[in-house]
Image (cartoon, rainbow, N blue to C red; front, side, top):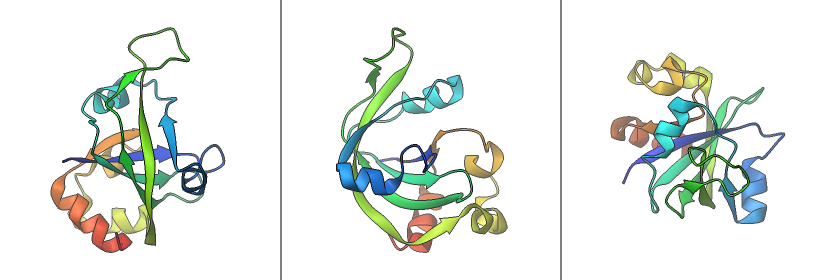
Length: 135
């Protein structure tokens, strides 16, 4: 099963908020490249939660609990959402600086397409990030 990386502004909705809520609808994505990634998501996939802003780090892991579906809050079928639930926090959050400094991640979308809010994580990178984060 693929793993994805989901970016969030911790001031808007943090990993701690997800832990408190246990689950949520992942919404607010409107860029076409990110929506293309969302269309690849499926129930059962996992996702790294990445805090943007001042933190810029992977802080935890979530489970995707639904396939993507049209956002019920918006009147545009192309805008998709999906449900996720809290799995576990990173024992050691992995910073963007650490990722950029490691040559294994040179082709990773997080490095190459910094503004992309949803991205699939290639299997080799997934394994390395889980090891670094203690997940």
